[in-house]
Amino acid sequence: MGPVPPPLSSPAGSASVATGRFGAVAAGHTLAIDAALDILRAGGTAMDAAVAAHAVLCVIMPDACGLGGDSLFLVRGDAGVQAINGTGAVGAGAEASWAADGGASVTVPGSVAAWSEAVSRHGRLGLARVLTPAIALAQHGFPAERPLCAAADAQRARLLRGGAADWSVLSARPGERIVQPSLAEVLTAVAERGTAAYYAGWVAEAICRAAARDGGSLIPADLASHRTVVTEPITIGWDGGTVHVQPPSSQGVLLAMALQWVERFEVSGSTQLDHLGVELTQAVFGFRDRCVQDGAALLEQRLEVNLAVASRRGGPRSYLHTTGVAVADAEGMVVSSLLSVFDDFGSGTFVPECGLVLNNRAAGFTGPPNDPGAGRRPVHTLAPVILEIGDTVTALATPGADGQVQTLLQVLLAVRYGRQDLATAISAPRWRSEEDSLLVGVGHPALRSLRELGHRVVPSVDADPRFGAVVSATSGPAGPSAAGDWRRQVATGGA
Image 1 (cartoon, one colour):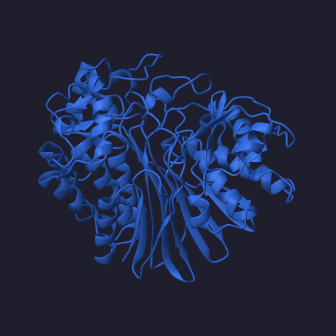
Image 2 (cartoon, rainbow, N blue to C red):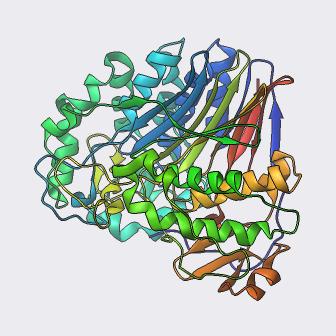
């Protein structure tokens, strides 16, 4: 259900870079940047700005995210790094089977509760002010862009099945204004009454009716019992500093496993970093199903890595979507975050009273111990990162489902061993291991050597969306800055 890759063409571009006095932002769309900068100028924190950007993205990019989906945050403040997990479980009445699509694939949406928790703990302006830009865009509209229209056309049959025949997003053509009054009403209710406006009452009832119409079993009690998980991250040493990753239910520990292997074993100048990255990716994804059960305990697992030849164990799955936001403010707070409905337009299940689609996160269930069951959360692909080295703190995140771990691994290896600055590392051509193939950007200098080492190389356009779209924000001695990928619709800004 992911987008079709473009034909082989066009060389790699350059990352966008921004600095600011109040703060700097990288996000999946320019309108999200505008909202975050507005909040920073108004005296908001990096978290206020991040949540404002999240809400805007939910209005303008419903193919990637929405109020029917999930949000995960890592935030570094005065008290250290904290992880906020805004994901939900399948319903308490769900059977021990699941679907990849439709109402039976829906888990309780976690974004709205996560926004409230994040702003309450780390914000200054309050949720009502933070949601103002998103409410305005839903009420007054925004011009439809080609990526959204193309995604809607590609998923039209699913969305019609899910009840979206009258949705303005589905009928819009590029350049036409999309107005979403029902979504504006939900956002306004949340701004005025908090999470109770979403997880109880008419909104919760409408969500459950829509899921039931499309084959699901959510009931209002499932939404009423939802809670955001706030905890410590998983932390490892890296390059004289530390890397923090999202703990379960995120699969962020897989990145920590790969980085820890590099930290423990000597990597010489002759090491083929890209081959090493592929081998580590394939090794750690062998433990994916154990992430929720074992979490940080997976750091004790031995990884088999062949530096001489491709092991060809096969990579992770090939689905994707999601979008990201990274913010740093003038007071040193740094936020790394991701939000998603999983596949394009999630489950395809539309809630007409609310103007939103529901996620299909239950498609993340696989085999034991990541098997489905009533009230369970599946292993989650969203895996934001915070890197601390000396007095510099950097947020990193990327969309791309199972590509997230391997994209960030490439960036971190390039900065440490390739002697590249962050913007250059973000701009560089990438590879992605998926299933039995290794996608490699046609501009990648290691394309030939990776094939010679025995990898099943599939040359791919450097702009292929499967290579991710990194957002980053840094707080350092020079003040706040941000760098963003040239892939997809990523933008940066400073205030």
